[in-house]
Image 1: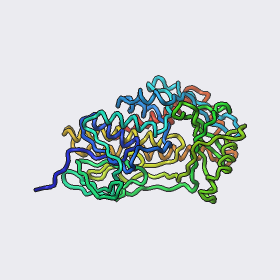
Image 2: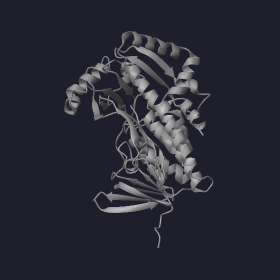
Image 3: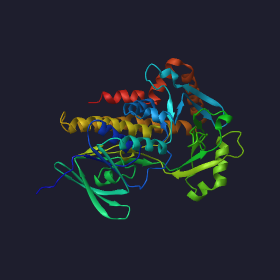
Length: 405
């Protein structure tokens, strides 16, 4: 008797991108099993900013209204100097003729996941299992067999027709598929803090890029579970310091009040440190395995492109995999997923996030002055501002992807 492969797709990873992949697939009639290594939904608050094309994906899945009810619309963003001076301010309202969502939307991913899980719980074709750590897989002619361990260390296996790795930067699926993760790691680590203070009182918009050669920062307005201000400040560290030195409360306070001009003491709710990479998988599809989100690409957070690009991966893959699943296309269509999403990441996400980092940390005074003057001129010119926002809001990149055969 031959190997019996379950008639489903296996998605490894229960973060936003994995769950959106699963939801998009089941809505197209593809049965899905989601395997998540953690025993409960993610609590990591890092991914929080959503661009218009991503909101369009979420609207198509029927979950946007629930998300909008607990998040923030961000119509304006600023580029600022560390002394508080405003270099440029962009109003996303000028995108109104190009998208139904002419704003950014802020909501921590730990709040997004429960809504996605609730939507999947209503789908008879969806199953989600926590506490299952994938250790490898074997590919067969008509499917894959995934090996795993539960949270007690007991071995097991699951089978399916296709395997999607949505299991983050350290992806077990990508490693098992022996797909190279090409790129580099920045020397400095980044610190992410959440503050109870209302930084609007210090003149900050709800999205801000604070420029400085050594002490740049990204400042975003979020809300806590009760709807109170929960501002996020992200800043780089000195590579010569230990994690303990970087996270010392006095050091954190010193850096924060340095960024928040006029503040004396700030109330830190959360503080974490992480390494930042610019990497892209050598291929997003290998046989019956596809990669999405951080399993396929990672980048620095300046611009908020990582989570957005991952959600757009999910929607793109689900559309194509459903066509293959239902016999309306051969599996060569999945190679187009690879071409479209990998090209988009290399040509837009990687370049744009590196360019943004260079902009906020520029050391040459003449270059910095010229760049800042140009940004101010762009913001003041409605035609140039529109072009800039079509690019930075990922609308142009979403359009260009569709043209890749």
